[in-house]
Image 1 (cartoon, rainbow, N blue to C red):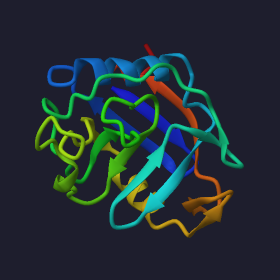
Image 2 (cartoon, helix red, strand yellow):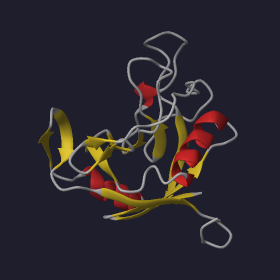
Image 3 (tube, rainbow, N blue to C red):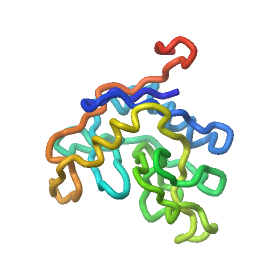
Image 4 (cartoon, rainbow, N blue to C red):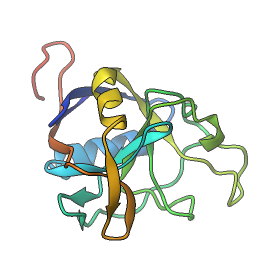
Length: 171
């Protein structure tokens, strides 16, 4: 279980290791390394998703590790409350950026092993804190440093940690 402590409240995410082992492990490794600490939700589209994992306040990029293989053909559907990897046009380019679907976005699912069909790997789901996600999704946004849909006020992931679901503490 992953806990994201944000300036808007806590979000608990359950990872899907069985279907998307590489993607879930990749996300957990970034959490364990402290990579997400201090980053912002930098792209918010109220009828689509909230995205984070790439920028510090002021849209200063944080350098991620190597890309991972797309596992969207084995993953969950991109339904409301699922967490998925962001990527470029290259289907195997996901690194650290992730998004939380706030609507059912099945059009992001895998349809075939083609450039247009790979889809986006949903690798977990919000199990607590969807109210926080819904609060974030309606944040006022603006254009910042050439980026659209950036929250006007920083929404910061203060700390991301792996928590032991049995005891509720850090592991």
